[in-house]
Length: 413
Length: 170
Image 1 (spheres, each protein chain N blue to C red):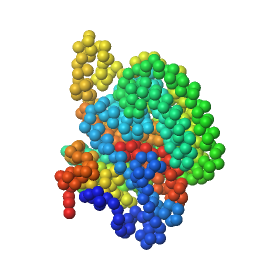
Image 2 (spheres, chains in turn cyan, green):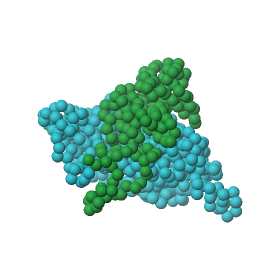
Image 3 (cartoon, rainbow over the protein chains, first blue to last red):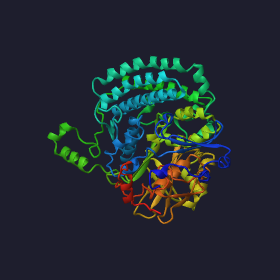
Image 4 (cartoon, chains in turn brown, red):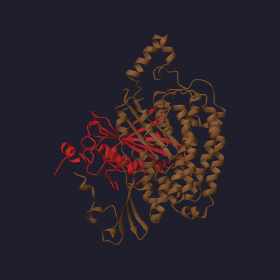
């Protein structure tokens, strides 16, 4: 490709050999481009569709429009500097991305995290899950044609973003979690604000359900569509609500508890039909369960520090700098050079709102990560899209893209 | 429930080059031409049942030799445990068999490794570039690939910047 003109494809259908079926090459079926600038693709997803009438024969996703080389850039940053980049991958789940990266560093360095920090991490990760599900619900309903839900969802999301701003100073790219704990303790206004939210929000979830759950139009567009069997879901690597919609009981928060998730009581909702409607019900129920966790975390929030006291990895508090020579040395070393984790590799997984978010971290003993790889749920779910979409009407594809809940920043990184 | 290290090393005594345990994670270094049969064994053997492939990712150890590594993160939903398989590949011929026939979830992950590291997967159903544009020159996640030096092209200066780009022209 040498110029803009060349990027307009006016070529021969034979060039698509191998991607589309023989029927398309002979002109029997139609090949249609969808995206990347299409409102229902939730970003910049391009799909090449082969259609027989209105039925999808095959679907070839084309991603990479939002590829920003985050994994490459992280290799040139020190461990602590690179946290800011993780926020920008899945921009609806900033705290979750921070969490998986910090957990990987902590596992690599065997760094302890105080209980208060762990509880606050859980609390904020669950608020992030609600935040992400609200955007999903709003846009998913908007795609299918229910406009008003979108406005309500974004109204409630504002309250969560206000809480994020309160703790970190940022509404979306919070970078609040750090290796060994949190950036700083939460302010005084935090607890009343979260309490307000958990008192206010359950009635709002009921509102959304009143608009959608028994709405005949919604049922028509979601029931029996986008079916995925349990075996296929496991085979194709699906996780999170997509996997649980097919009835597989696997939630990383329960299976491999991290950040003291085992201290909290919550249920994992499961589907039976594996269609769009079941996944919708699961995510709605997950919001309620997340609220339960938030409430427990807030009620039982322990007192104490929010960051590890291991000075080899965590900078000393400001107050010590004036009195302790050792603190000054640690401070200087950490901010000029960074810390050096031991040589080795770890893989950590957390349950993001979309599914399994994994971080594979390879250290060569230098202050910069040798290799960081993120296993992102949107990426794997998109690779399963052709399987789910096959045989459906093109109008239902919009619902199917919505139901696998992709964020293109997460898929492309 | 079988011990994975014991079961796999007994079944493939000559294919397992090394067993590493670090921070409670087990890594088996596998001969690159045996990875498919080891994966099949891990998935189908009763007592192991690693039925879920989380992730495939590449590592470039430049300038060491063998230069490339591909890590497979297996997980068993039945026994709730994970295992990492790792193959090392030389820089002059980084080729390994695709595990898509065992784990279809590897499809895009392997395409990503091919795209960003230039590791080839034989028997892959659709080995094309995934994240980078089709005609891209080089593999960005290799350590000898520069981090920056790409000027952003806009419509008003497209040709000007294009003239200085290092890629091959007809």
